[in-house]
Length: 172
Image 1 (cartoon, rainbow, N blue to C red):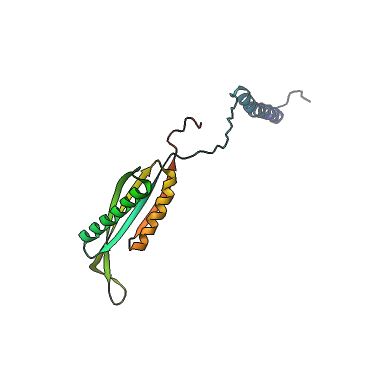
Image 2: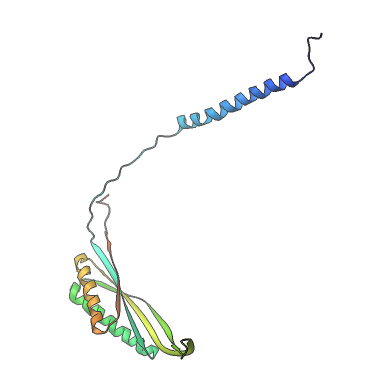
């Protein structure tokens, strides 16, 4: 009987086990080393604080419908002036008015079967006016007054109001 064996199986098994132990140790140790060398996490707290707005804005939109494009545009201008005068009355001149984009839509005629034709029936013009003011309490009154203009055969939509705080540094 010979003391040396030619079977490589026990050697391969022992080598595989040793290699598995080394790889497992490396995989387990890697996160621990990373955690140990990581910088500490700093958490800053937050708190709620009531903040009063010191500025605000709202956008009003007037919509007119007329047989001609020019007449619809003029009518929209007349209604926009009514919005501007209402803002003047409610906010007593302490506002900035900026006219925004204008849109024109061709409204097509409808035939007897309810289908649209290629013939223009009328024009719908929409004009927008943004009103910005420091009188945030007056914006609520202005919004209501603009809605009341709808009772005078005007078609006015009010978008907003939006409120802002101009200086956030003292609050931080």
